[in-house]
Amino acid sequence: MASFKEFMVPINLLLNESVWQTNTQEYAKYFIPIGDRGYNSQSSTTGVTRNGIMFFTQVHQDDIGCWDTSKPYTRAHLGKFHNLENSNLIQFPNDLKVDKEKDQNVWLISNRLPIFLYSNLDYGEVNFRILKANVNKIIRNSVCNPDNNYNNTSKSAFVLIEEGQCY
Image 1 (cartoon, one colour):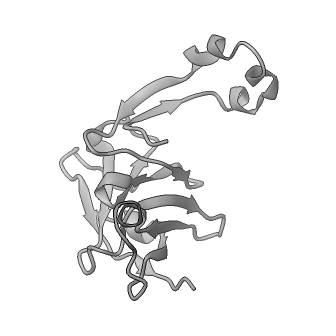
Image 2: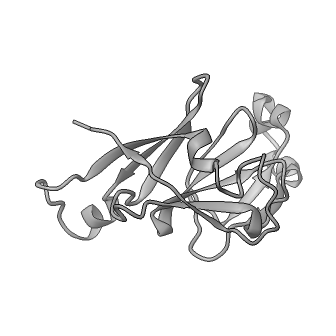
């Protein structure tokens, strides 16, 4: 499932298994919409760093985005990352994780599922990628950096995302 919208919900509600066995509609009111990312901005997964930076996939834009959760959830506070050296590096980003290392990284799995669904994969090309980027490096000059005081004018940060090997 992918959505344009972002919601917040108390963690104790999610962790309470008995809530989900009956009367689930009764608890729908606790899922509060906090904003949306706009047209063609569906996200299928998110990951949050220890200091509250949320990363999310941008499935239709072949990209990832970020948000400093200490700021309001508005489009002006959402950052996007583009790889200018290789625009084909991220294709259909479908999974994302933030690791627990001391110096955290964001990991992304990218594949060519849309090509597979509507055509044939070319096995002479790279069809699956595992990408890794250091969190502090990629948010350094972005609206997602908690140390930056942006006036909501900067919406994108251009960074390099490293490609790993997948066998």
